[in-house]
Length: 300
Image (tube, rainbow, N blue to C red; front, side):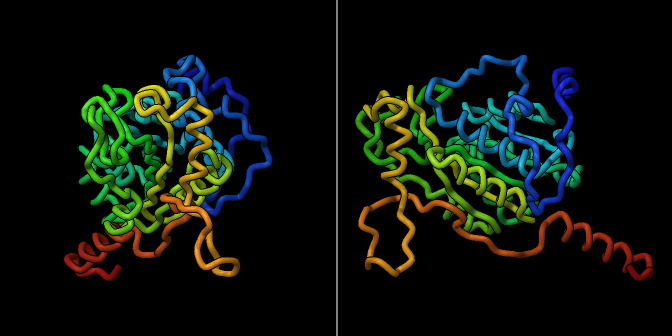
């Protein structure tokens, strides 16, 4: 914890994972390492909105900063952990989930959150995502999806839309994009959700639900890279890119008004799936106690 953190006002109390709201008004500066500002994010980058939503969720859950551990990899999203005034770990490319797994097994008392990007998580880090979902360890993975490797040169990523221009697809991308949420759900994640940065309050609530869930939570955040991706594809100004997210959301449909949504969309948002099965750390610990007890002839 930095000296700055020690000088911040009191009032951030430890709460349970049920999500009781704090009476204190959320002030984002209380959760940031202000001595590292100004930040490096480009004007209009959606990652800053996502960071605010994440810290807002942490505040509403009353998670004490000493009990919060944030692990990130390489890329624009990976840099976000450096600004959070908590226990933070900036790891190698594609490996934040692997580091977070070891951390959570060694310190199950910590609230472990992974911040990663679409390239970091789904390309070089894809195997780690699959097996973390399979194990169902109690960590929360927040994946920022801006469809491009923004920091390292603007290359095509696993989620780049068809026909989009990047530095490695100068004639337009012809690879189909990953549905990250479908991948996480298929691999066994017990909480899967997606939200856009335009709907910041809904994003905060979704992250809060994910952190409160006992098991592996995967949350995809549809973000915007305005400089590297937006300019190359003539997607408009930063506000235009953010507002365009609304046109891409699949409308909620309850079957009472019309047969089909009146507007096409690609992204289903909110909680996409939630299931219950044994959380890995507790299941592993119980198994070890049972086996060691059986071998020693004692009853556990």
